[in-house]
Amino acid sequence: MRAFYLESYGCQMNLADSELIAGVLSGCGYRPTDAAEDADVILLNTCAIREHAEQRVAQRVRQLIAARGYREGVKIGLAGCMAQHHREKLLSMVPGLDFVVGPDGYRRLGELLEAEAPTADVQLDRDETYEGLLPARADGVRAWLTIMRGCNRFCTFCVVPYVRGRERSLPADVLIEELETIAASGYREVVLLGQTVNAYRHDGVDFGELLRRCAAVDGIERVRFTSPHPADMTDSAIEAMGDCPEVCPYIHLPLQSGSDTILEAMDRGHTVSEYRELVSRLRDAVPGMSFSTDIIVGYPGETEEDFEATSSMMDEIDYDHAFLFKYSAREGTRAYKVAETVSEKEKGRRLQRLIEEQEHRSLASNHRTLGLPTEVLVEGPAKRQNGWMSGKNPQFKTVVFEPTDAGPGDLVRVEVSSATSHTLVGRQTGL
Ligand code: 5AD
Ligand code: SF4
Image (tube, rainbow, N blue to C red; front, side):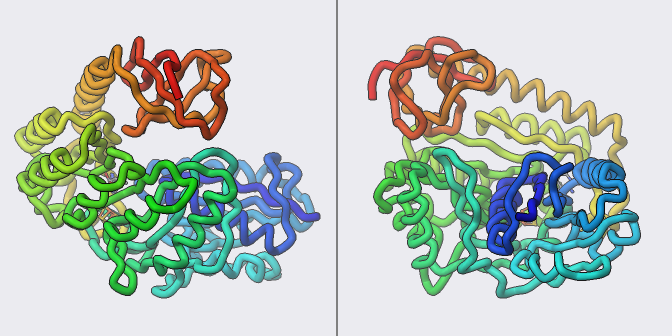
């Protein structure tokens, strides 16, 4: 049997797409392998969000092509957002590359692999939702379920609408059926995925209604979702979060900047005070609500004052976690044409400041849980603490605890006895 080797980069949507790719390849008679040197097909599922992500892949694929040497018939390809971003140009940019496939071409992977000459399949398709294709899901307690694809927002800095195409949602009935299969396979938690996941809408079913229907599926103990857009967060979704105990009290809500001037320049579609109001509506509706965010520093025009506004907004919202990025100009986006005003060095300084502030904030937040019980969905052995168990609490914090009879998939109560900025440590006190 022929084998494929798949390496994945980027966001959870892309990792979920890798499961889809693996499903398609299995359907074409390939088996997965962890060793690139044994594979007949080597595929990197790539990310294009920042230049750094692309540079890493460019290096890695050249390395794999060199290692392949003259092994007959071994094909190497690039999939995902970077493939879509550069399209067929990649075939000449990377000598030895056999195929390029964008996020809407995975259904045709089998044919692509039969092609005699280097080929690109980079047609975006407004209708492709991958309905009917079965992903080969990784084992574990948590499954991903892609409920919508694409993005219509065109934030000025972002390449996603260009490489993922327009918004399209899957029918709710199809999703619920798939979630029932997911539950029957033993998963206890689902993460609903989409580039703007809360823009979900199909045949009159909105995101709030879908959350309720997912929460009602037998065997699914926890429902999460990522990433929502602040301007798409409706009362219907907030009420569903408040009403359904299965929907976790945690939201990753990208802020990008705490300055109205920059938010407007980015065309984010909301102001700082609208974001603030949304956070307080969520806090009022959902007990124990926890927030994380994405921030970009050094967007063109960002002054010291704008940056300070971001820093104080982060303090005010009191995020439990933040993904912090230096602005990276992406060809094809609207902001690409705008001259940069913040030097790399200054971006680095601003980033470092926010990283340090967030570390303190996360630590303080974790310290507030000391002595309190928290519910953990057990995933398996802890990575660092030998013999200990690990899982997530509803707020998506990692909790490690002394070993008990509890195993993967169990929901247990753990009392927190110590904490770092990234992990809660404790002892199981109940089921
Ligand atoms: N430069 C830096 N960060 C970016 N992001 C998206 N595009 C860029 C860019 N050009 C960040 C945003 C987004 C997250 C997924 O990546 O913060 O929310
Ligand atoms: Fe990119 Fe904005 Fe769409 Fe998010 S909402 S994927 S940041 S364009």
